[in-house]
Length: 451
Length: 122
Image (tube, rainbow over all chains, first blue to last red; front, side, top):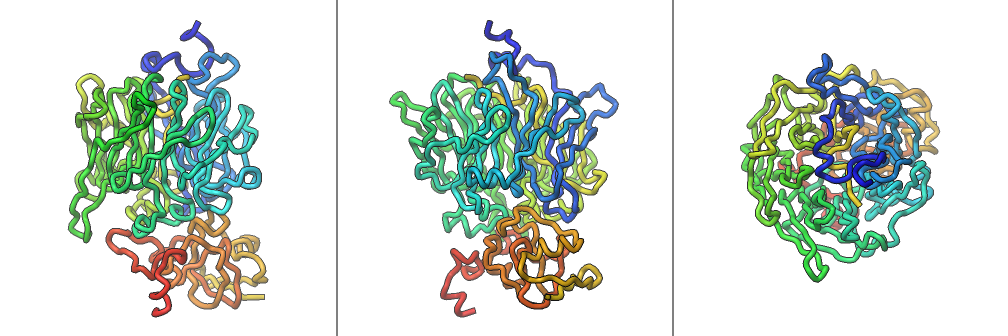
């Protein structure tokens, strides 16, 4: 019976919300670009408030070599194969953006001390698929696709690597990239046979750092793409123009029947809402516009740089960050056309609103975040990407990244930084590292999709 | 053979052939260097050339200002003469720049989009 099967994940978003609270989380930490000649690693963090090691890094899984720049990651299986008892959410796929390697990490044998199960070599991926610059990992049923931002030489638009459940390369997933100029994030909603993808830039453009002038030279994205998911080809482009400069993270609502989704345009600092109309056409609108803020030392006002975006499992709240301003925001999206700001907290940033949080001087601003399935605990990290960190927050080199936790009020709305939780990656044994994306062993708000 | 001097490592010197990228040659001689993509696209291995000449025509990471400031992408650059470098992040003082505070002039962009006329005038 559906809902009581033995496969991974949960029968529905409402079942996921009832899952036990997370006790561990896995977070990327990098030394690439920091001057410390050590491998990047996957940190295990104790988030069980009853544990003596609460709010501490309790294990570090080092990668075999230096220079990967671990960034985003994803599970081998999620609720999309909840009815398949042969599958389990056991392996975390962790790509290195710069090295092109994909590490398959076994988190089940010893959840506190995960270990490398398999390495898909970056050179093999380049040879077999002509792809480089891996980013988003999604499972689809028992198989896996990973978006890559470039070809083997780092030129756009890249494409999608298709792996089977044994992590063997099947080739390219897509049948066509159509006219898509750039790749980045993607999410799919099977009941509407749709995938949506966003645009950052070619690896050769964004990896060395951010040259603002290259936006005007059309080296950065400003479109969203709607795909026929079964035919594996793009069918509609939404040109966002100045409202959608550098559209990064893209998410559908968790409700598998919904066609509503959101994208954060990083440089424009806007939230774009998109949905399917009755005649199967896709429309978009700007629903949140964060004003640039003046800074005494800057000739032009500072943009927010909305680098990530997340929807709570109950589809009630949308969370966004402004990495350069330093705030996290919560919006009630019960009416997705008319979001209502319900919470805001500050940590780091360039506006000087919260330079020290829980006793730690924050280098960077809120950047990546992960939300518990019940929507009450949000873990936030401060590093974006090594070269971009070095441009905007050079002090992060000596101070390292920080993880903080926000208590979110799911009933009335509201956010408050938890005063008992802080993980200072500036104090890591090999020197200051920088923390980025996080995942929970039992699932979270950016992992699961329902068929 | 070319003599490579690492100024910010107590002027340590190494002999290289110049037929392979400096990153490979120096690492094989035991120099601990940062690197990432290993094809000239990501800037992680950038070093500052103080003296000498390299061939780094296959790099695609540096803009013209960074090149004019002496930066070299070691994973693709080959030594053409004896060279002196500063290496590692200590050499990156001019590599990273806040693009909002300190924008690039048209001739300082990457080669594929830089203003040709202004390069000639430079």
